[in-house]
Image (tube, rainbow, N blue to C red; front, side):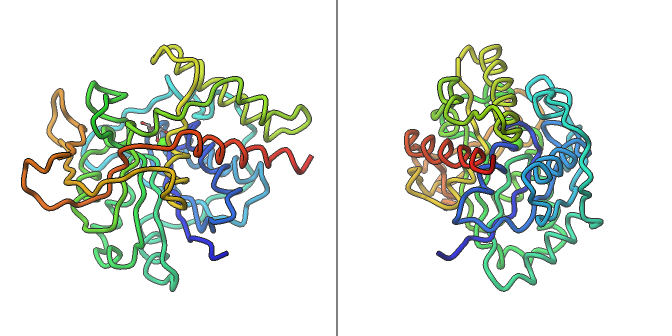
Length: 315
Ligand code: RIB
Ligand code: CA
């Protein structure tokens, strides 16, 4: 089977960690690199977390490049209250011995995208700062990126950091606007779909294996994430937002999409970071991106859990 070349741009982050572990078990994916961006926690912690995860599963063949330490314009506001002080549910894994590539993230992304003979799909699951900076530095990459499938925004449902705004877009709305206006084939995987398939504690039994440190790690961070969802959203399960973006990147059957005109509010105030989805085309503007409007929750959960279960095999 022909694998899809993917770069995950991420701010690990509990659901980011699950998305990376999920992607590593998907046969359809060739994970070319992980780039990190400040979001859930500061970028140093995001980078350390990406390194810890790859080292834990023996995948130090995959380069990690540290990215932007703050949004393009706004002040960085991190989310330790959700993801823990360390960004991984306060599991406090040992520092990794694996080191990041000594490279500037923009130079790395531009060079990798331009020189790669095969098409590359970018899967941003944090604020879009790195992708925006790369497009500013070298607009030509827009013609070489096969697709951007990003977790962010929301289409017709509530926000999770303000009543209207989703965390990744709220963190860096100016970067999101650059991607929305880039003309690159882009799919938005918003809260309206990522919050539908929930992982409950009953699902954790399928993944857990007592002698397996990786499955123990997965259980610990999901247990933390479920507790946080209970506290803030009054639900007994958790939404693995970022993993759905990874799944959509390789299997469009998981979601229903519509090509729509989408913009983002960048100005300060109550609506900053809101993704404005013109569902009925009332603005008369040309549709610019594919928007996920529904999801096959059963199919996604089955795909996610069956691939996370594979981490039991080695032990
Ligand atoms: O709103 C959910 C998104 O914000 C996810 O990517 C999560 O990791 C946080 O970054
Ligand atoms: Ca994320």
